[in-house]
Length: 337
Image (cartoon, rainbow, N blue to C red):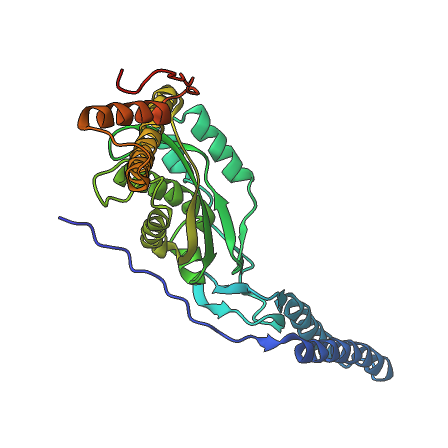
């Protein structure tokens, strides 16, 4: 029976009050509380035996004014703040500037690694123990998120391509947060999620394509950079949609054969390059020989029978296709002697 899919959290934008008018009201509020406090004390001096009701009232309202001071926050362009009130999502503020909101909105969001019960349920390796200690020492994540573009440079990964050849591959991913609610509530740590899923997508894409020399009209990692980049971007977008992240660009930055087969593949590439060069030389030589014979016959310089024509063609091809320079031999005798 398939497990039920967790419902995604979706962002809705909310406007916060401007901070400057609220700051003016807050200062007047505190000054009024101080005036009420001292005036109540002075009134008791002139009317002994009367209870100073203004003192506790002024103290309560002064405390409320102090609490209101914690509601101010600023946002720079391409920044957003997720509003969380006692664990409930109340919206996202995206407008830059100086704002005031409910001072009881959380300024940090919880969730740090695995729970203590999970850690005690199974033995931890040294690596997991180090991650657990780092998670405990890591401060709580803020509710303010950056909406700017981020670059993620993956490490050089060793993957088998479509033909099973081990290759080294790395990529750069340009991404940004599109849905702040999904980034905060649907995944534990969206930045770590992007890194892990990016490396997984790079491995998946590398296994779909051959390094080079695929079948006819088949895309390869080395010869179809744009197509591979688009496939990688599409794969990443599907994986990172759960975290509210949009991928703007993904492109390979490193591609090479693994060291254990690099020398063999290099010799194969050199052989293919030599064959291609030889084919070009032969095609050019045949054209030059044909042009030379045609011009000689047209100008009436010499008349050759089939046997001597074949000999001249052979000699010219040897000279034109040879690796070294030809050493001419001058025949001083008769041509048909």
